[in-house]
Image (cartoon, rainbow, N blue to C red; front, side, top):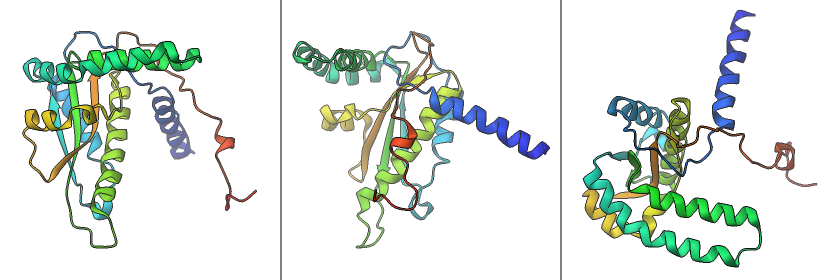
Length: 213
């Protein structure tokens, strides 16, 4: 019974972290200590990967002199997103777009940006290399987000690097065989009102044994 009680308590904590890990789009200016950043990256390395190849690399940018040019490269995208807001009729979409613009603007000033990268591996002709690497990069990114939330840190899963990838690759000095898969700003959130997440009820997507009606 003690083991079951301990397991239930652990599950409750894990579920609390998962169900309240909202994307953070605004950060205050407090730095995040490197031991804490190292801790959440270590959590990312505990993710599963194809054949345990662990094809990930993590570039953590916490130097303002490196963050700033990355933010400058993406800044124009924020104005493009905001320009689309007046054309949206749904207030929830307007809020979502404004949040995206705020996130883009805050990227260069976030205490840290974690670039989750993938290193090419040969998995054989039946297994597309990039798809296999993505499966590892995305699961490791999710681990990182949850570890950040458990620490009281804010973070957001993004692919913002796609808007200026060649220049960002040059700044990070990435070799050709390493690709950027996820860009995650990390820092102390301006607002600490966590979750709950807005998701469709599980019974609308849960199917037993078959998807057929």
